Image 1: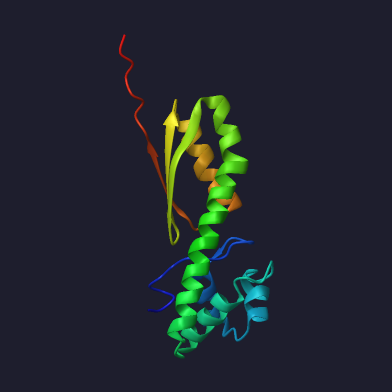
Image 2: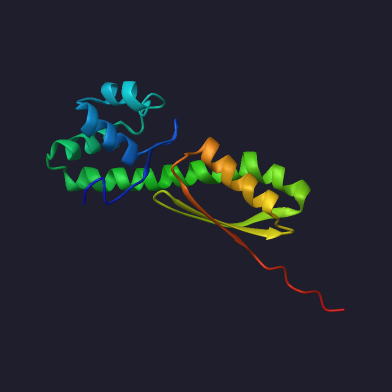
Length: 156
């Protein structure tokens, strides 16, 4: 499976997704992680994404990628992306939603798609806050879906 068919957040530190890296690799004939870092900043943080960047570079060159390495990259990426999204929601977004009477009820992350379920007095302001903060603090390439959970009607 190629990097193109599996878009994902590769550099969680700097918020760079695989399509941007692949495009830069093809356009600029990038050959190394250092080249990618110079071109799109990916790989300039903790270094955990370096194996994924190497995989994308090999894919861009049409070279085979070890299936074991690819699977390991997928698992690390999935776990780290989820942690980044959930951490951002918990530390930066939830405290700003609370005064609005809104809480985060559920989160689902798959590749670059993030689905957030809000509960409480969810308003357009709360939805906008979640969307803008995830794009700013996680990755601007995320496809963010926000659902508003209906509050149960009180029985009097």
